[in-house]
Structures are given as structure tokens and as C-alpha cells.
Length: 187
Length: 357
Image 1 (cartoon, rainbow over the protein chains, first blue to last red):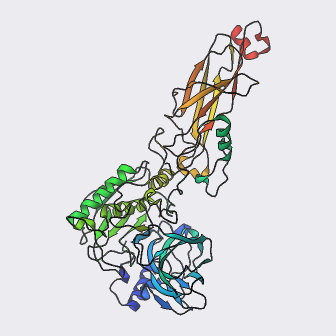
Image 2 (cartoon, rainbow over the protein chains, first blue to last red):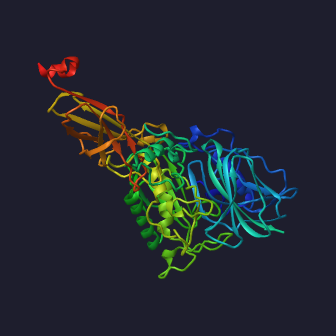
Image 3 (cartoon, rainbow over the protein chains, first blue to last red):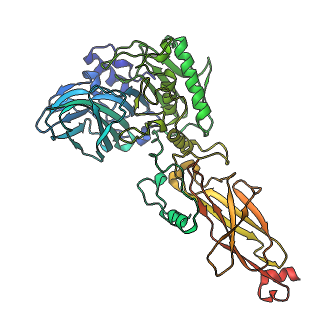
């Protein structure tokens, strides 16, 4: 099954159309019975880059085992813009993808500000953890915990400096899990 | 069951009653895996069949390079060799139904080194990115693409083993925040490069194995349980007969099992064979137990038997002291009393009276 192929090398809009069409006709997977059956809408990564600033009104999407990737996650500091995180390792539906510790999507915040991560698509969060390493660090060894728990995903910005922050989310309803990364510069 | 689970995860339960028993008796009943996080979470979709053979071949038009093929085969062999369970196995077969691809057609996430799909019970797919693939975060470097692997490369065998683990049903291990337990699992949330610890792990970690055992069961009743597990056991004892004449013998039979707990999945109520179970005795009305002997294995898996010739009424119990090399807890059986008498005095003890006739 060529689950992600339609979004490679095609114009964004065309990808959206292809994905929506392909998934609408996709046969149910082995996991369908345990997953929500809400209508599929294309994953946001098909319609744009994986990193960037978006307006606060995020596109509507619905969780579905037929979608190819988990929903995107956005981080916002108090009163700031939403910044979509880099999607790293995930499991979703009947598949998954493995990545390294990523540098993260850049965002500037103030020291001690409350950072909030929101998950698109109406997907509920069962649990989350957040950890950081100094910006530019790879492999994640020696990461420092920043928080964990059930929704909502909120934690305090670290002290001044540049930090690669990794948030791992376990989605409710056995949908899967995903890791998102931000490169947070704390002024 | 002699233990009482109180912690957040049934498989990582702290067994307060057992700890009290340890303090009381000076026995070592603690499991070996206390310090670790729990078993890997499992994926939805359920496991494949026990020991199901999953035959794979290279995807036409997307065959790996020779070096990557070798690494993927090695990853499959490592999965088979280190599963320590009845997990599915992976075998290369030119006619296999499960496709493994390599290259620009990879359908992984945008930042993915490798990816998989699994459809139980039919099969799986797997992809590895091509050498030189340019990501937002850097360029793909497989260690196998070099005569001398440079720092910063990914070991294809390690990554393939991670993907095979996913195919078995393993989700990413939940590490301590500082990842000090990274070595407990191959199936990790993020992959490491040479020379970071774990970059070239060619075996399943103990917390991978724990979940494989939960999903697929252990291979034999004598097999060790992963130290990433923390399973309670039950120990029962019976005497046959329970009443004897002085000078006659009775046989004590102990039965050791993994406790019946729904969260133990396939491991629940497993017979536990090949362990050391000790018979203890005491005089009724006293509290101090005295070790008698180690009980040899019985004829049925998980049973241990020893014949005794007590000269007076005696209480017996069996004790299993867990080893630090596996993830099952110790336990002690309730006591069973063996009555001893002479024919003249046996009138009040019907079970002995029969023997006197």
C-alpha cells in the first residue's frame, strides 16, 4: 500500500485532490473498527510545508484511519502566532514513520511564558510529554523534561537561549502517536 | 496471589504486600526490572499469529542497494533471533507477499528515514529512504554506504530492526526524560546516529521483548520473562495424602503460575517451569518456617514435587524467590497441613483410619 506517495512531487492543490479521492475509496484497514469513522479530510502537510506560521484559524480536518499522517500540532506563546511543529516519528492508522530528533520549527517566545500546543483535526490527546535539548543538539541525549500529563498541552518556556523542544503526543482512541519539534528562542 | 498492585501500571506495580513478606522472611521476592520504564506500547490492529512466517521480497523498481539489502536481511534475522517470544518471523522469499522498498518512492513521512504499514493478518510493507535524500534537517547517510562509516550516519540494520519491531506490533518505547534508558528498546521515538549510544543496536531491547511476550507469549514454559516486565506469580501447594500414619510418606506438589491478570495478556496463568521452588515446614502453632529442600520438577509443567515423612503434624508451604534476571515476582503458597498419627490414635482422623484398615 502506497500510503504517502500521492503527496510527493505533486503541486499542493493537486495533492489535496488526489489524497481526498484516494482515501475516499480506500478499503477499510484492519484497525478501522477501533478508530473513529469521521469523514476524512486531507492531512495539512499535503497542502503546505511542514513548518511555518499559520493564522489562528487553522483549516478544518477530521481524524480518520484513512488519513496518511497525524494532524499537525501548533505551538503558541501568550498572545503570539501559531507555529506548526516539525512532524517527526509517528504511528497512525496501520502505519508509521521513523525520524531523528529534528531541529524544530523556529519560534521566539519570552522567558517563562506559557507555551500551549494545540492539535488539529479535532483529535483528542490522551497524554503528552515535552523535553528539550540545547538548539543544534542532535540525538536528544540528556534531554530535560519540561512537562507531561493529559490534555491540555501546556508548559513554561525555558530560560534564555535556543532550545529544541520535542513534544510527543499519544492520541486518544488508539489513533497513534506523534512527535513534534520546535526550535524555541527564548529572549 | 500474594501481591497487591498499587501503582499506575499493572505491569509496573509495586507489590507492597510482597515487600512486607520480604522484610518478614528475609526472602528475595523482588523483580529484576524495577528501575526501567514499562514495556513498549503496542500498536492497534493486534498481533500476527504466533510464529507466523512473514515472507518479504524487494519491491520491483525500488530494490535496495546490495549493502542495504544485507542490512535489512540482518535486521530480519536479528528480529527472529532476539524476539524471545512466539512473535512472527521474517524470511526473505523471492515470491514473498510483503514488499520492502528503498529509494525515492518511499512513502514515509516528510522527515522519515524509514516507515512501515502493517495489516494483520495479511502482511506488511516497509520503506527505507535512499542514500543522499535531502530532508529539511539534513542529508540521509546510511552507514552501510561507506567503507568506513562516518559519524552522523544511520545504521540500516538498526533502523530495519526498528521497522520489523513495528510490524510485530510495537509502538515507540516511552523513555525517561533524559533518555538514560534508550538502550532498553530498539523501537524508539527518534533514531540515533553514529556514535551516539544505541546507534547500532542489533537486538531487540528488553522492553521491546516485554511487549512481544505480552502479545505473542513466551516460547517455552521454562523461558525467561523480560526484566522490563513486573508480573505477579501465584504458588499453590497440595499434599497427597493430607493424613498419614507415622512413618508413612506424603507428596507435596507445588504449582507455580503467572498470575491471572487481564493486563498480562497471553502471559496470564502461564505455567512457570524450570525455576527454584523451595519447600518449607513449621510445627502447627509456631510462626517460624524452616527450609526443607528444593522441590524437583513435577511431571506437569510448572509443578514441583517433594515427598516427606513427617513424624508429627506439620505445615508445609512452597516459596518461589524471584531472580533478578527476569521480570516475574516471587510468591509463597498458603500452608497445607499434614496430619500424622498412629492407628490407635487415628480414630478421630477419618483419612488416616482408612489406612489403618
